[in-house]
Image 1: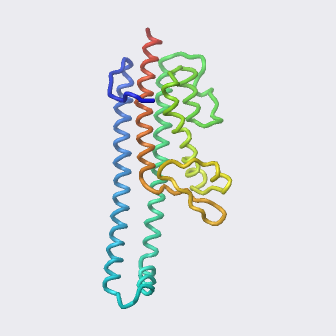
Image 2: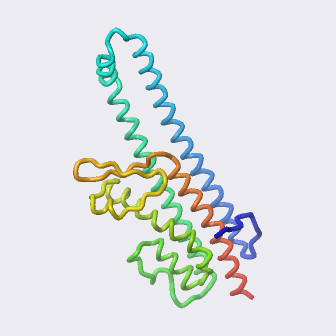
Image 3: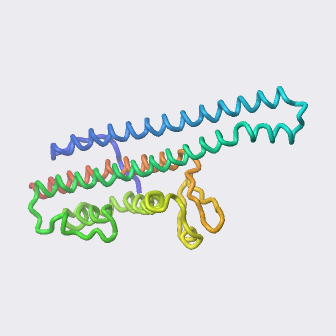
Length: 233
C-alpha cells in the first residue's frame, strides 16, 4: 500500500503545531544518531591507524607476537568502544519509543479535550501496554480509518518487543525467547553461554525505526484531521 506523505494543510489548527513539533523532533533524533555513529567511527579509526603503525614498526615480532602485543595494548580500548556502541544504540531505541508513546499520548489528550466521548483514556486497559491503549482510543473511540494506519502501526508495535528486551532485560534473552523473535534489518542475536545478547549491528535499524515512525505520524495526523472534519461538520 502506497501513501502520499506530502505536506498538506489541516482544518484542526492544533495539528499544525503537532506536525511542526514532530518534524523538529525527528530532525533532532536523526542528528543525534548521526553524531553518535560518527563519534564511534572516529574512535575505531584512530585505533585501527595505531594498530597499522604498530604492525609496520614491529615486523620482527612475527604475526603471533604482533597479535599478542596489540591485544595487550588495545583490547580494553576496543571493549570499551564496543560497549559504548551498544549502550548508545540501546539508548536511541529507548528514546525513539519514549518519543513515540509521548506523541500518541499528547494527540489522544488533545482529542479528549475537544470531544466529550463517553470512554476516557484513563479508563482504557494498559494490559497490552500504552501503545495499544492509545491505538484503541484512536481506532475504537475516535474511530480513525485503521485500514490505512494498520500497515504502519503493526510493524512498529512488533518492534516494541525489541524495546522491551532492551529496557527490561538489558538485551539478554533465553533460547526459547530467541526462537520467537523476528529480527528486523540491523539486529543480530549473539549466543553467549546459555543466553542470547541482542546486538544492533548497524545504524540501519535506528534509521528504519525513525523512518517508520515519521511515515506513521504523517498519515496519523492526516486521518485525525479527516475525522475532525467529519465530527465538526
